[in-house]
Length: 90
Image 1: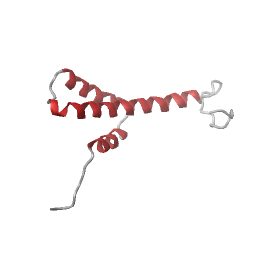
Image 2: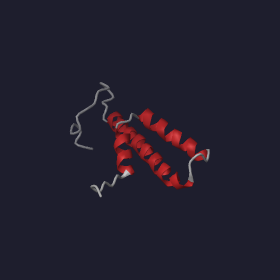
Image 3: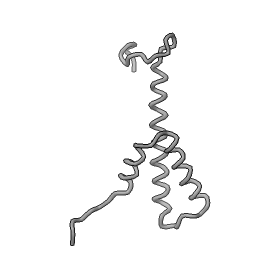
Image 4: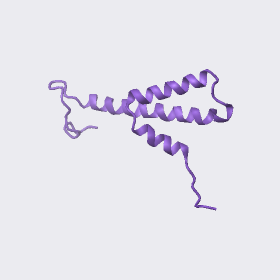
């Protein structure tokens, strides 16, 4: 027997999702949702498909939170990002 390789698909999917933009992750989640709705996925793959879709949605959520934090840090007078410690609050 060769060396044991245990590939964790969830780990690989998370790694792949990290490279995606918001639009790409949203499109990937949408494609998986369409497959789930069309019953085109074998029952044995249903859980993995759902998990993969959740990973894409999590990626979208993280990207949205990053943008939200950037917007919250904008100085309304200059429309530039203020340093995090400028107001003493975070």
